[in-house]
Image (cartoon, rainbow, N blue to C red; front, top):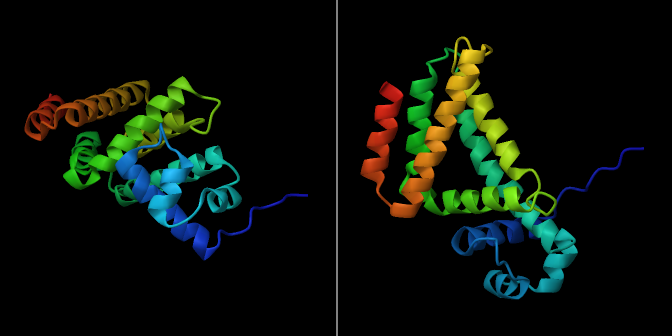
Length: 186
């Protein structure tokens, strides 16, 4: 017999959104339930009841962050295969937008924690985001199934993520954008 989780209540969805906004500002690594609960108008007990544990809440927050990422991926799917460089430039524009800095900071934190604590609530976060982005990049390549195409999209993903880390560390949008554009035009 297969059991399914019941749909989240309106209160659970509301608290998840509030906790997500909190996490975008404060991060997840040092998340403490008391300050979080106070900031979102709840209590640690309610959060534990709704999410099962602190790890359950972190998993829910990571899933919520991934929802934003997957929404972008859906928007960037093309039927006409415009080419890897075109999609990569659009991805960079989305990743580098100032209004996404907090989401990108959260992504870096979760990605890093996933590598260091693969058995914790961060689980397979890093691997799943790599798979998601490589899948999108593959849809932009007419010859997406060849070894050469796989290598090229892996290089493009490495470029985008490296430039993103540099941007988040320095705030230098102009320099990182020029580097991405130059690398994509070669």
